[in-house]
Structure formats: structure tokens, C-alpha cells
Image 1: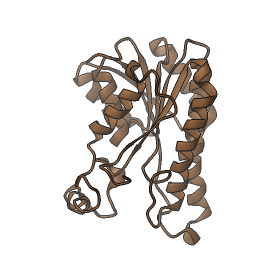
Image 2 (image 1 turned 120 degrees about the vertical axis):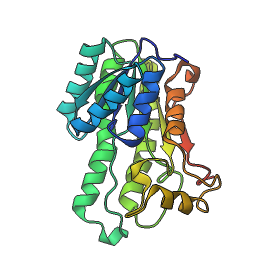
Image 3 (image 1 turned 135 degrees about the vertical axis):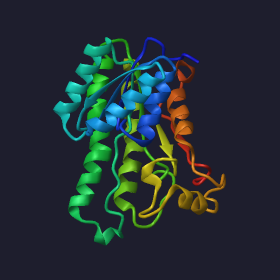
Length: 252
């Protein structure tokens, strides 16, 4: 399939895990991809993998907590590839995994700043460009933790991801008349580093999730990427403000 031939796609948090898988999937379907994040070395590895598969990508360092950094990221994407057709706001962090009363103010603020304000700031600049240039599609990455299910000792993260789901729907309503479709994917445990518990190996995780979700395994990163590409594609042209859960049945 070549659903994104001629399209320019921006993916934040694209140096590892789901972000890298999403970038590779878009490139495999013909997109020109800007991979963004804070660590240049990991972004360059994503670019290397894209180019090894005959795709087109460029690495750009950016900080989603900084508005000017994101404005410059959008401008660089447009300058390099001529447009911004799709944006995937994937950057996020997990901190403060203790009971609510024990979460430090520093950890709380860091998680909300990156996971919520970072998505808002990214959309602010992405939408500003898209609505003046024929529209586009935005897919935010949330989590099944938040709007869909909860676990102990993750209040900061859960709160931030519930906010991303709500923010996505609000943005979808506000900007569909501008030609900008906004949706969200909410993964559960997936084959990415963030789903590993402290000291846990991938084999350990595989054993743990056999009894933790109905499917009996984590989602592959490529399966989450496939959901993102669907929402960004023309096939989802009437899908606005949807929250697509990909969590092996955990929140069913």
C-alpha cells in the first residue's frame, strides 16, 4: 500500500518504541517523514532504518514542552518537504509511579507538562499551519490508562493520558471545520520499552501479560502503528474525535 505517497508526516517521540514504529510505517507507505525528539542519536537511528528500507526521513531535535521549539519544528518540516499533511503527537513520559500522596510536585508537573501541555502546544502549531494550507490529519497517542482503565500507583500518568483523550475530542470539534481531522490512539501494553516494569525483560513481560489481558500478549508496535495510519488515511475521512483503543482487550 502507498496511502501516503507525496505526503509529509511529522512524528514526535520518534527516536524509540512506538514513535519509531509509526515513522517506519508511514515511510513504508510512501510518506516523507520528519522524526522529532530530544535525543539526536536515537532519531538518527530511526532515519537510518527508514533509509535502509528506501524511505525518506529527516531527524529534527525538538522539545515538546517548549512552544518556540515546536513552532520551529513545524516550520522546518514545511521548509524541508513542502507541506505538513499528517502529525502524530507521540512524545510522552512516565514518572511518579507511587501512590497519589507520595507523588512529588516535580514529577507531577513534569508528566503533565510533557504529556498534556506538550500535545496541546504541538497541535497549536500544527493546526495553525494546516488550517491555512488545505487541512490535514492529526493523531495523538494517549493510553488505555486514563479514560479507559486505571491501575494503582500511576495517577500522574493516568491523569495526563485521560486529559489527552479529552483534549483530542475538544480539538476535533474545534477544527474539523478548518479541514483538520483530529483523533487519538490509546495503546495498552505494547512491545515498547515503556511497558517494561523495573528490571523486567521482554521474556518476563510476555509471561506476565499471559494472564493480564484477554489476548494473552502485548500488542506489537506495528499493530499500534497500523491503527495510527488508518486514522491518518483517507479511509478514515469521516472519523473525527475517535479514541481507538489498541490494548489486547485489557479495557474491554
